[in-house]
Image (cartoon, rainbow over all chains, first blue to last red):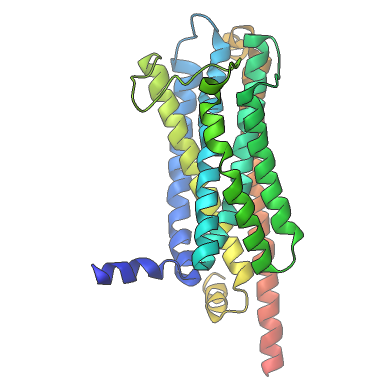
Length: 249
Length: 55
């Protein structure tokens, strides 16, 4: 047991992380391509049109996974930021910073596809209701985190200050999730919950699951790739970086 | 094929969602590759400089 925990902690060392992530990224990238190919085929070709919304509902297959990803990634970012702030683990700080751009992108996708889905179904691209507004705030939190990180020159101070912002902002995530229950919103409630059976056809549910997995695999691949670059930047003076440079030519 | 592209009259909304997402995902990946490549180049140049100073 004790031996195992020692092994585990070795991966928090930047050099070990760099090597391990380098081996993992191609696998996650391959899974991303396979899952997106299957999900897009099922979602755009195989799955039948919705009896009420016609083909416009197909936006759901990217809208829902990206909205989930935006929220998951924010929580993950805040956890890494907290670990980095409390235990001073360098890799946790790097992971938090590496997650932010992809989280922001996923949140933007959720808003963009939501607007394009809202227009044919609700008649408007945007309304200031609780779900949409709290999701927009999530995007601003990501952007604020990134801007704060970039605005402070001292690396440790930048990491600490933005970690506090990330942790405070986490309160917004349950607000997004429960907004459709707490307030009267135009946005529909959850079709998939942990406790009840999903209220949609099996083919649609399976496709949504595959697209969600694809979004996960993509995010993991991109975040690990970005974290590797961050590690190299921070550790540029370390001897292991020179060894890797020589090995990779 | 035309029927597929028409998306039952919702083409601008469906394709506007999927294509913008695909495009930006590609931008993110290209940007990462470019950032990695330029960083590696810079690190190699710095390594060569310190090697010369050592000699």
